[in-house]
Image 1: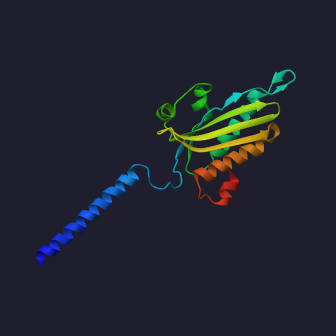
Image 2: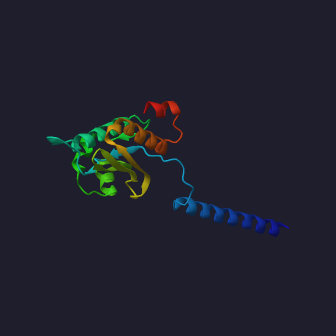
Image 3: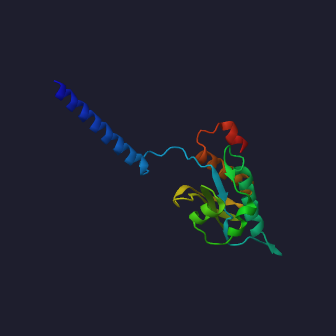
Length: 178
């Protein structure tokens, strides 16, 4: 009877260790169901701008891109518990190719928001991506097609969409403030 009890205990222990090992392997390899993003730091990279908006004597391209860029940094920096690098800290990456890993190392951020703006007459076609700087994986991606005159509304829309992705449990009052 003692030998039977010892065998049963040994089988239970072996099964427990095996299940624990499978659990650690499963969760350790990133196969666990995805939960809310826990991003604590972000670099909003200068957008790549393609095309121009001509108005008589000059071009408004820089104004459109800079206005959107400044507005996004201002709104995103209001997210609770999120460190956002300043425009000056990321300015040297404008118009350059860079890897997420370089940005992680040089700016010490967990993620980066990239943007591409295509200007066509009074229209804008934009793509924004939130990228994990360790893996290079795209965490969030949105495309927008708008008229240039809708930039203020668009800034708010992008910031809200990003807030919902970064902080899914954020109260509506906080999201509205952003």
